[in-house]
Length: 154
Image (cartoon, rainbow, N blue to C red; front, side, top):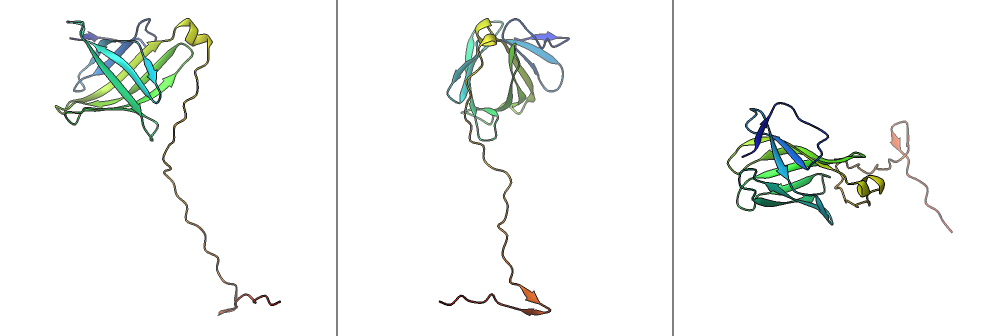
């Protein structure tokens, strides 16, 4: 079971998740190292009572967010990634297949190598959300009459 906390440390020295459950309070959970595989992120959730690890894979989708979907139900996580010079953060909403909902903040401190070396760029194709209609050319008018363009002759 995860540990109940009074405050959230946004600069932990170990990989950590803070999450709410049913809007009651914040809980702290241990998580494994963050691994990037192409356009997805992989890490383990660690059960603090048993030490069991549950692998989680988040896929980067066209909306620019990382998503996890339960294969056996309606569970879903939707997370935004932010990088600072010292930490990697994933934060967003979660919903379990049981209907519980909450907010999670995942945090990984960067190693010395990651802090000194810039991260490689990932290309993400984002679906456009705004479309423009092409303007139609209108014929010239004189008064109320439409005057057609003269045709070219050779």
